[in-house]
Length: 492
Image (tube, rainbow, N blue to C red; front, side):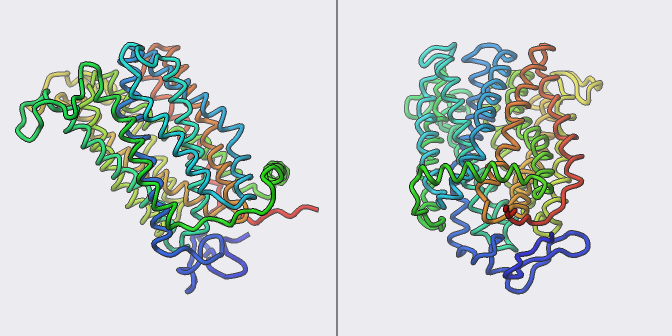
């Protein structure tokens, strides 16, 4: 097989496995069909701009650390519970994502799934306001349930959003469009965190003239309302910014068959795909590699704020500044990563991202309140007058994490682009369901690894650092993957 669209001749491989574009490729999608208009494929990025701020504020920087440290009240137990939440969501997704994708391929439409998952996530995000300190309000068990549902719906939404990419993006712009989507997601997260920081978190804590004297809208910091408000804010943002993809991005044509028949045919397709796994051996190798490396990378981002909060005692304001700068670094990394993807090829850009992220993680866990690089004792005293990130270990951790953010988002973007290049267009959603599965299998193994290692050694450091093994295994497995598009296996 070669990476080409046989009927239209849009792409082919040169001797080095790099994609070479023919003259008419700018009008064709990876699926070999006419690409969407610029309004259509740029609007496709809006659902990521809508969705990612929820992940950034709730899961990474603000709500998860608040839940771990303040609601649960014990950083070690809190990190373990977060690991179990993610593990449980991963288990459910492993059983359902490929089948949902196959059903959507048969039905032809992806937008109804986007709407449904966004609405459920919005309701869950709004309810986070009632998760009060020390398990009051909603209570810990209902809060875990809400976070579990949000995590499941986030990934399902991602499956159907990703599956639209092969049929709408021009071949010669797919890396740029994928990278732009991640950039806009981080722009949204950055803007919302700026708002929370200056409107709710910093007022009353610093005597700076540009800050309000007290938090806006009567937010009560003593009840951690500045932490809890991020859910409702992200939910409303998501509803608004999902509109462009619904209005301007073309969707597949709806099937005329009854939904029950569509579901049965979708399940049968997954079974046939698994039976023909040898035909899709190259894709299977890629998914196996991704099963390890992507969840290791996502785990670093998920647990990075929790680790820093527990290690340095960072409060919400510090975590917000940390998240703002990290989102800016990720935004830059996503854009540059998209350009590298189109110039170097997806596989090469991805390998660079994985190896760099692995090294950065080992550097991050080398930091303790008075130590960097495992053995260099630099003390925990303040080295400048700025009230945040005042010690050398904190500054070192902050700067190192910016490097990780750039390469992490490059990895996310290029892994999606590579999957779009490898998948048979006729089975795009099913294969992106398997793509989600390749992360969700370790989305229950990797957090379980973090949770178990944290519990076993009573150490956030060892639990967090265990993710490096997953990235190393994934990078080694990726070596044998070829950057070429699969064809549909014909039976009988």
